[in-house]
Image (tube, rainbow, N blue to C red):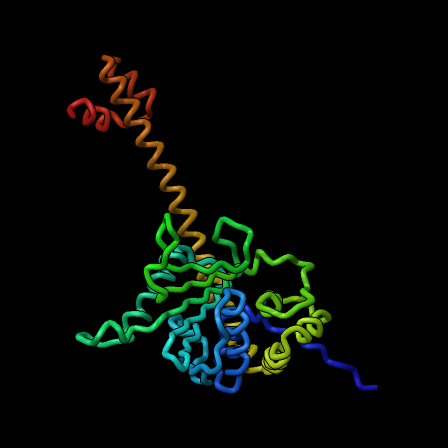
Length: 290
């Protein structure tokens, strides 16, 4: 009897694997189906065609720190779309999003060209963490006037999808974006059949993930990318923790200085102020001079 070898699936939230599934010419139909689920949920008409502007190739191995693993596409009408998967929190995601959106918008035309040539640019961020203060797993942002809700123009559109806000047990009985997001989050394989019934093109994405998971070279590249992502996340978390600690320490020193100023103004003894605030004699002396 021949045993069945079960291969552990790679994580589709790894940006390297995500781009292999959604960002290759062979899987352009998969990307189109995902985008149409995204736009239809936002009340927009479906796309009929897309052009990959930075398709995945075998040269895009994730060994360099600056590997470009987002997906850029363009519609037949010229609308630009950028899709980015974030497994770990890079912090300042909101500012980072606006920066990359503005780059995409700016580079459409050359200096001196007519601004009317600028086309709508859409950023889609798929996040494996929560950053927005609501319970929605899919949020869509535009430029709107605060009081009347009128649109300044429709050129800016930002989608934020937070996988952490999906219900663990939620396997939908209808099609739509949530099926794609559950697949990306890593819903168990016994539920795959239900998802593909609702979204048939998901079957091709799943087949691609299974194929990649069985490829030794891909697994090595995947492991290298995961190590880099984890090291980068650890560095960012360490820097944030250090920054918080420094902020607390600086705040405490400011409080001590303010206390010393008040005590000096009230005419308290110099040695008493140094002992109470634990500031150096020189620092209290400088405060007294000022």
